[in-house]
Length: 226
Image (cartoon, rainbow, N blue to C red; front, side, top):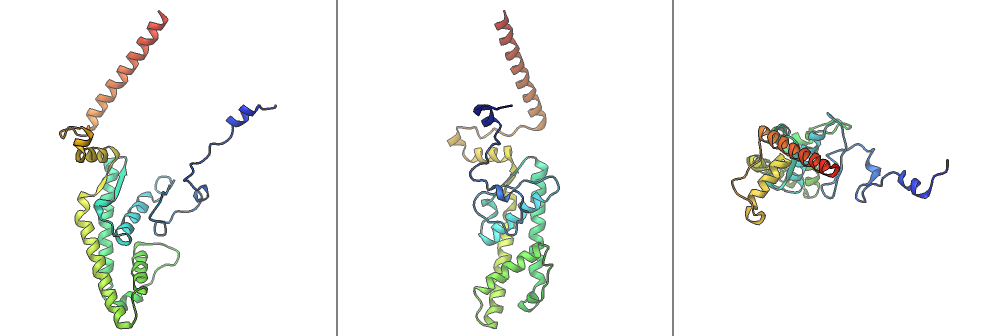
């Protein structure tokens, strides 16, 4: 059967967005090596490590880019998911602090060993400090002092991030937009007293909207038939 030009065009697969590199689609995502700028699309199923990757990127932004907790926006679909992200972030910050305390000096730090093929928070932190040291150290004495200073600076960064974590933008989509509109109430011409609907209110509003839509649709069709 011969297809017309128009039919052939309709059967062509949809093109990917210009900003999406399809070559990356089959590449395993490593949050410890991913770039911290530009657009990144990660497609993954349940239990594949999406939350772990998100938390790792959050921590890297804190340490590598010197971002504050309140300068990073994390949005998800449910309040339970947002609460889990906060809890796991706090746990990871405590783990970073524990690791730094486990390395009291440069000698102990240099003796640390890790699995070559398995990425981990400990391995990342060790690599992060080591890279900083290689750009500053000149003599053995200076290297030890640099390590002590880097350790202290990193601890301060983690402590500040942990303290400001309750104010961080880790919320659902509707929670974040509601908070944003609250900050920009005058610009958005929005009342300060408005809030997000709870589950019961949302269900009632949805039912009312569907009922009104069905009534309007069927009434219009009935008028056209008569």
